[in-house]
Length: 454
Image (cartoon, rainbow, N blue to C red; front, side, top):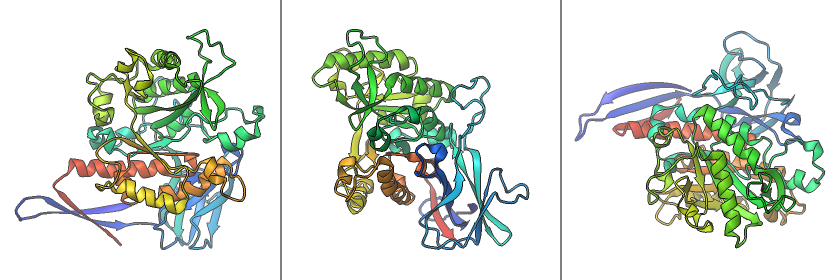
């Protein structure tokens, strides 16, 4: 996107700046990871067209190197694509992705480069009209995106569009070793582990916790007691998720929100178990968790700068009324934010619900506060179909629709948005672009902004 900015000083009752943006915009395209494989490595790359792609380029090239600086023949050439198609599987399996040096979990963490904007991985797509290069996109990561615009640091958490994952810990590290078909097809909600989610740019993690009966309940320090639960199935030990978060935050300095959203197994009317979990969280994350001085100030009213300047950038949301005193007044814990979900809605109902929430009108249950929108389709809702849908099929049904809806005005009012299988969308791109736009407007309140597409 190329911007030509012409500034005029208005001689009215106030002096401001008028920006006229002339946009020479190629058809918006992006790469995602398909949901056709058992694991992401076996999945096909997906070429996607945004909903406002009206005039298609003549052809597209898939590359394994950045194509705009040198003349390269495409690895795969795609042409004669119908205007009605918005997603196309490419005949290329993703394979094992390797992050830049320092950003793989087991890399040496000394002198790791920061990527304030983004860093491309192994795959690029370019669009062409004849031999004219129109645009280049890539499969990318955003390990340091909260520093991508200086004005973003002054924004309150409640005003940021924060990309998140639903059932963040529901992933498999060894698909072949898992015997349960139900877990593989219905309880797993992400291709990538928490470390990789954070490197891609996810900044909100939704954690549902259960007590694993096979562990020793008599030992409050037993790290194997607490597990991630999804669809009432035990998936991964919580301690591994906490270690990933701790290492990523120490490396990146980014703000990460952990929402302990539900406790479906082993917690009912057992405050002592909540106390054991709190002790574990404090041991693992306490030195990097944000500490509030005034419990009456909601954590969503903090700015990124407020948090980063303390060198404690993990925000922990926990239902404080489940904890005994004095843990319920712990300075490292914040009250949960409002949560909303499309889990039991069809597409039409989800669209109407988003219209109500994201409008932020007086009739909306969302006002000037932090809130989470879970853009998901529950397994129970899919029971109304002729066949029980897998988690991937449910994500495929709703993900692209929600990410496209958020590219418009609703992206400017979004707060936390979570998805299953986030890597099948460009939700992180959408969120960051919305935040840059909001940060610009916040920093330049006297601007009047017109955008003209040519």
